[in-house]
Image (tube, rainbow, N blue to C red; front, side, top):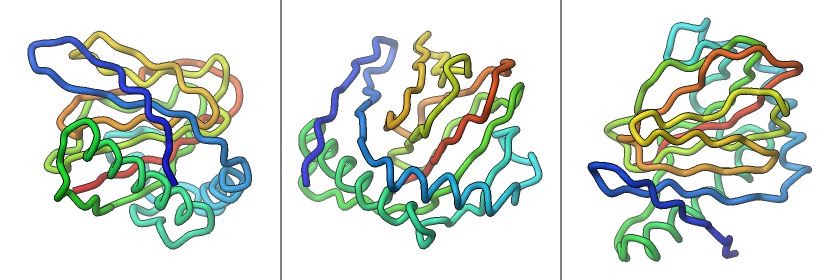
Length: 175
């Protein structure tokens, strides 16, 4: 299976890429949202994300496994096509779900020492917050089915903002 990946070049002191593609996997999305709701908050707002977070290792849960397989294929494709790396085999190390309520946020952080990180959005509120990459002065407005993959050293955040509904996200890291 091959997915089209649109690469957005980010201009800055250090050359890097942030990758974005659209997935049409509504049945998988339903399973993921159900699992996030069933888990509730397992992290008690004590990490960088000040929102509800599931366990760190959700890859064996319905919907998450299917999404993991898709993301792994795409990261492998990015590694081979954009970086010419034929020897890289993506290995997922953690994979979690998030449910942001109005005014929840994520403080600026990165995911070192991993190589790639990602955020996948399920039915985000129209008036919800963007994913921001402050060092590149870039913000990406999430849409349903948007997968954003970025090198793990890149700092990112979600600004506190009032909105209606919930902002469901799946995130993870690869080595």
